[in-house]
Length: 141
Image 1 (cartoon, rainbow, N blue to C red):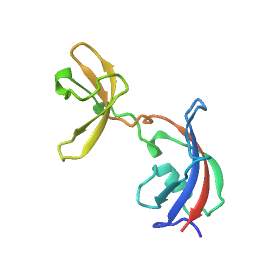
Image 2 (cartoon, one colour):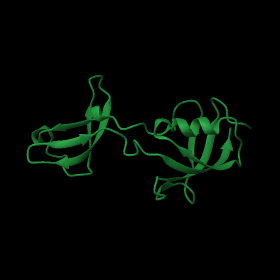
Image 3 (spheres, one colour):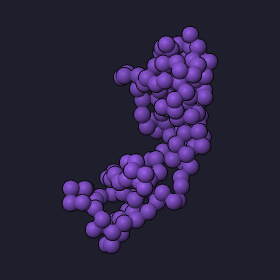
Image 4 (cartoon, rainbow, N blue to C red):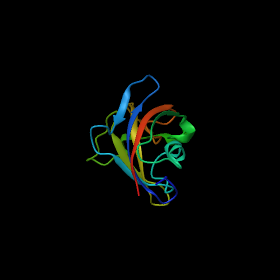
């Protein structure tokens, strides 16, 4: 069966960054399951999978626009340390959550700490990255 909108797809992937470093892999573990056409995976993979069948394997490179997007400077903000609740770890690399004006949860990564400012980045950690995938489609239903 070929992958089409609404197909339930199971696949394995290995993800490498621009330097060739393995960032993540499902080979040897649990595969990914998603419904095709529901934007549950990055656009570059979803478009690549269209009309493929179980057993299909490939390597592909996905540009930032079709992966996690380009870095947006408007998503890099700062706040004073007093804006954080006592139970929040304020250290570089920590993820903090807040709500946007519509009440949606938004995650920010702490990237820098100064005496009176904590810098927060709301971009995906893989924003601005060209990604290399190795994929294998396991099942299509």
